[in-house]
Image 1 (cartoon, rainbow, N blue to C red):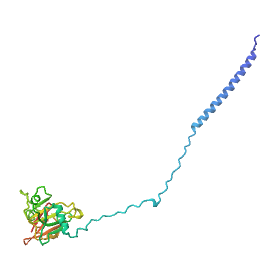
Image 2 (cartoon, one colour):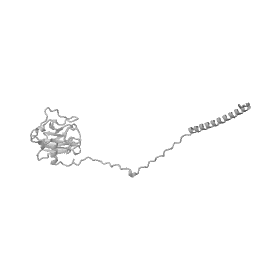
Image 3 (tube, rainbow, N blue to C red):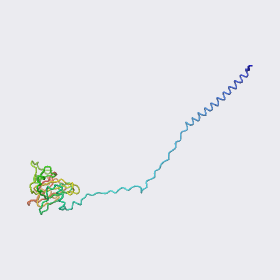
Image 4 (cartoon, rainbow, N blue to C red):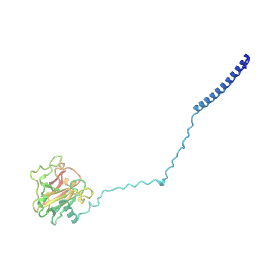
Length: 260
């Protein structure tokens, strides 16, 4: 037999149902708000970064610093400039520069003189020599390492700002048998003519006199009539006495000249 529900009971059940739905809805809303509030607080609260500790370097102990090396000066080696050359040194210099093409003369007079003849600050040497036997072809060779000059052909100074140069020679100078020559070896660096690299050499004709002397360029200029014609430089000149005639062999900037 079916149960009959009156109108009053039905209203009662509807009220109970509405109250139940309302209670459930309030609880759900409260949870949602609580969750949203927590998330909002998390977003608004800034993250706290952990600061790295500050490193303080310790100063280097004074004893740990290596001392700077002391500066050492290297003065110019002038120990050999004032030492007179020995016969052995002269013979070795001639052999090195002229490859046994010439030998030292045998006169009793002074056969060499030392000075800065080309005015470059390095000591040179001038030696009276003569051709070795059978070496004339080698001495006069066009590919020889030395220059053959005749200073008397260059001429004396003239009244010009520079020393007069010699005119071009159609025929090169040639050395004859047993001819007396003045060999000049230009120095190199602090050791001068003693240096193994000193190989710029000359063979001068007609000026290998009986007595050679070294005088300063300043002293030489005193003996020159036309003083303005000489290129004034520091250096030395060779005073030469030949056949009772005194003259001077000097470097004019490119070659050796004769003045008397």
